[in-house]
Length: 409
Image: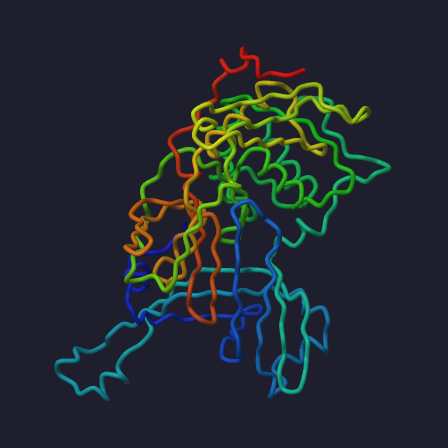
């Protein structure tokens, strides 16, 4: 969740909230020149850098400094949305409306920073300029790890999941390695909580990188751990959804513009296979672990999934079982996936948070986990994607399953 004050939440709840949008380059505000604001999308398991385009007027050659000095493309930029809080300097009961309008002033501002980065390109045509921004995590997609001739190996020891993720982010992608909440690139509080999950279960991996991008490896880690790794508040955030959280806010028919509910049987998984102990020479797995939910098989039929990765892999049965069990736990029931579009009342709620949804037409009245968000700064709407498969009771690794006949190899 974005950190905002109670005043921000109260303002956002207004039907005609006085939203302010801001576009800055360096320390200068260019909001007044914007003709079309962008849409910013974030996914729960994807930390690829966001890229958006702003259309602006250049009638007065406002943005020609990009042409005159190409180095200015590297100037820090931001997209923000929020409020200006007005302080009343006089009691309006004693003055007429015209005087009161002149006797007000902006006492403070509060904005959510939706994107921080630099200019990726500027295109000039007629009296307009299209400015494409890319967020500061561009280096996750710019930097590759190893190559086919000289791979980067993490095979000399059995590494905790969080240690591998940390090495990818810091040693290879160049993000800050500061181990405190002052880290400017990594949300260290969330990383610490995420670390404790895999330390407690002693989940360990090996890896061999042959030219993969850092963002690609982080996406593989998200897949292999069913974790959320995304960008929020200008930091890389880590989370594994393991507890049923309280709803942060409520969305109902009165404050929802549109909604879609999907029941997709292809999302069902009631038997999962996970490969472990990968051999980079023979290109084979020494171990395959499986987990099954018999009740789900009876109800829906057998729905299997094979999970094998050859760039990063589990080293033993216990570690692989962690993923097999969780894949079945979250996939054994057919639960709705929802997409809603609403005004910006819940803009401060973001990926990983829970929202209470109610809709008479869709027959909804339950809590759902936010899995992605799409903020349309031009229209002033926010689209949420929700999933109940990630809104479950606490997950516990069941080691007893290793005694079953589902362990192959």
